[in-house]
Image (cartoon, rainbow, N blue to C red; front, side, top):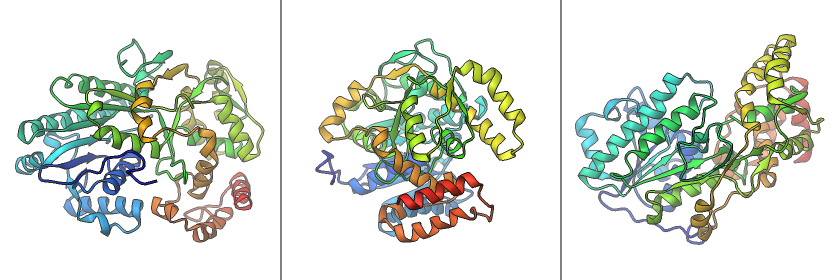
Length: 430
């Protein structure tokens, strides 16, 4: 479906009309980069780390290659800017920063640390101080040529352990936080809220982001993927979860479409939007049933989270002789709190503004099989498969490569029996 059919506006480039994008080499950032390149003819400045300008440029070229296969068609419009959001002035020399401020009309700040096991100090360095530096640069742009919009990508999980409805206008509701990621993103959003009187800001809060709904492609195998991988291997006989607990999952294509459109709409200025799945939110029970059916394994028993945390998990780790299984148990524990939540991310405002453009998240059950298919093909992140490969539908080569999953891993490591069985079932199915 073309941009005009989806209700998008095509923007023509002009002097002082460029976009600065952070996080463009990451999962969500790449998808946002693709939208701006495909749906506008504007120039994009991509802030990226690198030992030197050559390395920074190579990282951007690699992202374009992952997205499109042949990066050359877009290279003339994308300029790599070697910098660092955690450093004063974005790590740019004064003259370079001033030149950039004269040209940039819009900033989309996607860059963040999304690791759940990161220490609070490091999480704050990237998510809080990095956002502070971006806000400072936005104010410089405002003083120079004028800033049309700063779109800040937050997370719905600034809600922390809040129970009940969490509205789009909510932020501080007395919540506590499960990890440094949630806390640091909450603190960053507080900074952003403090600049709303001076800057044209839109805050965007996606929930759990998974692969593309049409292809399953993802560059990030976190949150939902870890428990699914463990399920596929038969690691868990029991899960610390409530069957009725909501699992708010959205595909990255919906998130990127929403970020792109909301960054362009005048009515979105000063607003906060939940990019969440409601009213198509899944549940723990549904996810377990989808996984049980897909992997042809018995459903694990669901037990009270406190009982799992205090009794069963330590026992499983202690009794396991398989080092890889122990690592999977420990890693998955980071994500278990998200399967016992009792919060609803009210997205009525977001749905209202996106509806005319036909943008809405599909129910997880409609694309779950594609997520699993791609995860198996990519060996749950151990094997690189680009978005361009999947988009081209090069099934013959990918299918041939997938046959190798039955025998060896990416560095000659033999896969266990569970992985072989799952791979065989997928090859038969497709």
